[in-house]
Length: 617
Image 1 (cartoon, rainbow, N blue to C red):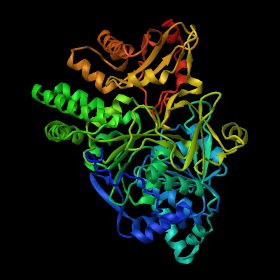
Image 2 (spheres, rainbow, N blue to C red):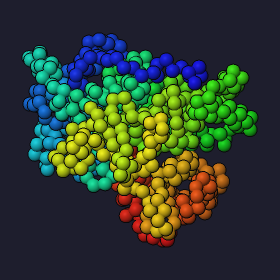
Image 3 (spheres, one colour):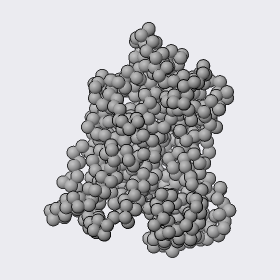
Image 4 (tube, helix red, strand yellow):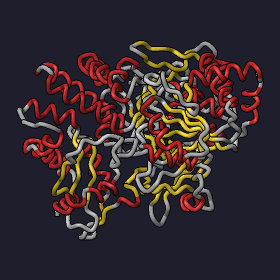
């Protein structure tokens, strides 16, 4: 495999590449060492603006000084309610440099959720992105007596606002410049006073069940984990990353912001969540981490484009991906690849596969990383056939992100890899639950000691709630969530995630929830891929007036039935899906059925759509 892909910079990096035992100490060491090197880029009004380490340091120092001028004390909490933008990182590092606790709030959260998170975390300063987010904060401000100031990143549309409790980020920076001039050493004194065992960040779980819980992570745990990430997949100052997942989620906070801070990799921020496909092609990242929904969307885009391609182009792709699949099969089996096949693969790339990679924007990628939800093994194999290794990692908020990872030298689709070098992973002998122990395990849940005791046992093992198996090589595989395993009326144990992953491999299906616990047979609730199904309808003269009518069209029902039939052929009769229901409401992250990471909430969906489920039985 190493002769096909350049693995020289994918190998684990075990040395410490940037000193510092807290996040702010590490950041300021990075500023001193990297100075004029570019660290971040963000597209504004069609132009990419670069931020050097030095410029980032100046902004962070001013914001931190502004916080001190506002009376922000060590261990105080500041929250950030914003999309993924450069200012998020500046505010985060300023809060930590001021000795505070940094908490992120999903920009899709409603005002009531903003109230709960600010109250639970005792937020004294709230950073918001723009007028839309400010409205939420103002709606609940009267119920938050501890909230001293709201700081707005983007004041467009707010120029006439006269509110003593609200200031712009520019005003806060100006206050910081004045404060730092009068107290030149105070920010750095706060940085030096910050201890590894101090609470650094709060990451609220997305709350698929009950209210979100604030997972507490110390500086020591964050630094330890960031060092560990480089032993999973190494990156350096020559790498380009794309920053687009929510920064309040552990994946982008640790795997994006803090890992890039440690290694010096360049962070490129997308314009907004809708422009991700275009921005990927512009940025062409060398290291690309995303959730399965993104990888599925790229694959769907290629499949739809192929249907519009000329017969010659279709034949070229079919031959090229066929050669790539032959190589992938050998790589996955650990077999050598012959010279003739290598030559054919070079030709396949030149004729077709390079164009596919450029269409997605992964033509420079040394490897792809997927996590946060299960992914179809067939999808992993497809990217490998394009010549780009896809590595699956697994972890959770409470394990500070990745706790296992597939090594590039031994890819096993369907596996989450062996335990990462920096933690232990084992199966509970009674339940098969996956347990994690190490310096990356969180401090506990804020204000919820009883929930902490339920989650981390006396020996320090984190109970993840995922059920799995492990093979003779130490590679783990998730079979399901403990609470999601279906036991049919006939007594058959079924793991719905396997069926759901196969369904999501379809370009016409975005998400699926399989039903069947204590039922005579399996059914499924399906969320269609609007863009691809609309295109299917237009290409086949299927009349529809809106999203709901699209889902009810007989031809669309037949299309989804065909996709379910395809999946059913892979499973035993007792595991096959007998009926389905298409969600007729177009869902977004603002809707209660979806988590902020765009996963359907199984329990809520089952409750909300119980009449439709009963109708299938």
